[in-house]
Image 1 (cartoon, protein in one colour):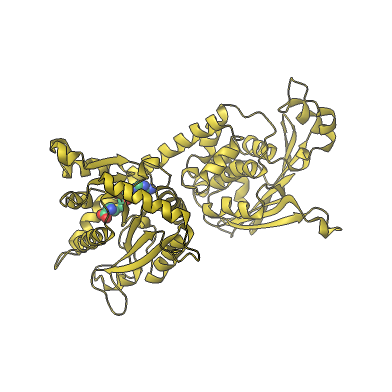
Image 2 (tube, rainbow, N blue to C red; image 1 turned 135 degrees about the vertical axis):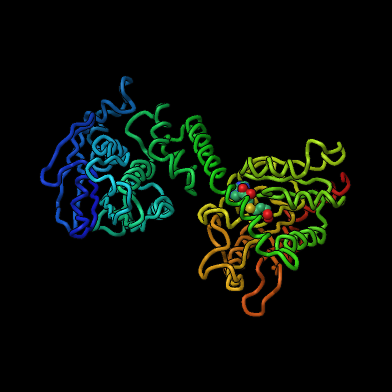
Amino acid sequence: MFLTISTTGTSERPATDLGFLLHKHPDKAQTFSTSYGKAHVLYPEANPGRCTAALLLEVDAVALVRRGKGKGRGAPDAALAQYVNDRPYAASSLLAVALSAVFSSAMRGVCNARPERAAEPLPLRVEVPALPARGGPGLVRKLFEPLGWTVTAEPVALDTEFPEWGDSRYVGLVLESERLTLAEALRHLYVLLPVLDDAKHYWVSDDEVDKLMRAGGDWLHQHPEMKLITSRYLSRRWSLTRRAMERLELVRLAEADDSEVEQIDNAVEAETEEEQRPTPLAVQRRDAILTALKESGAARVLDLGCGQGQLVQALLKDVRFTEIVGVDVSMRALTIASRRLKLDRMGERQSSRVKLFQGSLAYTDNRLKGYDAAVLSEVIEHLDLPRLPALEYAVFGSARPRTVLVTTPNVEYNVRWESLPAGHVRHGDHRFEWTREEFRTWAGAVAERHGYRVEFVPVGPDDPEVGPPTQMAVFALGEARGDGANGTNGENGKNTADEKKEEKAA
Ligand code: SAH
């Protein structure tokens, strides 16, 4: 099995620097012994314009079977397995082990000879001609694309002479990117090749969690397929998977605290300042949300991504809201919110109506179930787009309140902010800002997928050309397919019964 890594260059930044970055000289072929056979590194081409390094594994099938998972217990089919298993030609976990053995410094981004080049992205092309990929080309794309790769994954036919036999479980993989450093690229491969293979050649033990954190700690926590990657990497050993997931979540929370929140704290202030006179947009937004909540008849309300608690405070002033829950990923925002609400000095009656807790909207959470309404006010644009489906599922698929309100900036309106340079988003932490069309498309699809009806409400002055500064979607559960041909719709029936029960209870 083999893999090639290529880069291109110029006379000032020659492609042959790849040799320095990999710590392997382009002029000679080198061989390294590993416990399962030999790894060769050679350069099929090495000139300033283009340079390719190849890693070739020559696997000892017998050693593999003897030292593999069945070790010591005399695996019953070992005799046969040493002849028929595909590991010598295809084992990705062997390739991963070889990558980390042969390119360990490069994987850590260490390069004393060319430190500046190790730290910067370079044009990369990685080829793996026969990659075992359980999940097919679709999964290959889902794993690599969010990391900044352009992916070409062609299924390999079982036998080209007999196309009717269909495809094998191998794909020919080509990855291309100009956005990644070599170290990042190697760490992606080290984790994801065995994940795609989904079969390790050795017993997965506890220290595998550390290995995963070392190679994936700086990107896996943001990956939309984090769970699948973690579970497959750890051979579906659940206790290890859970431990790894917890560690990754901590990375995420720490990061959220540092970047998201600090900027968000300033943002709310900045936005309010910018929008002074006549009524600040933040206030208009809160009013629009309160109106929609009242119209929905909600009593028990979630404020998801509640930030510093301004909306929670407004909701508390209206007795029709009997239970108000603010959720945010940021501890710092929650501390400010609790200070604003003077939670510690609140009377018992008031304080029994309000709760604040920390949680990430990218995960389903049973604590969010059973509410009448959820508000996501200026929250979605703070998530990276690939994480949005996770939020969608947590809110619309799992928590499933009857009403969901989502507000987000209308990017078309940005030309009307005089102080905003052309082409800029309103705030540094906004990962995206949508046009009215983009927001409607997203909201329409969400409603469709989860059985909601959706309507759109402008917030702020509705400019005839570019629309309003804030756009709001009002989702209502169960009404989208409400005209069911023969009347009985089990789910709707159940909801109504539940609602009646809740109304009584309230
Ligand atoms: N809803 C408030 C605050 C908006 S700022 C308002 O309208 O003023 C966005 C908030 O979303 C921040 O407080 C941020 O910490 C929170 N947030 C971002 N990503 C989150 C996530 N994954 N889970 C929960 N909260 C998140």
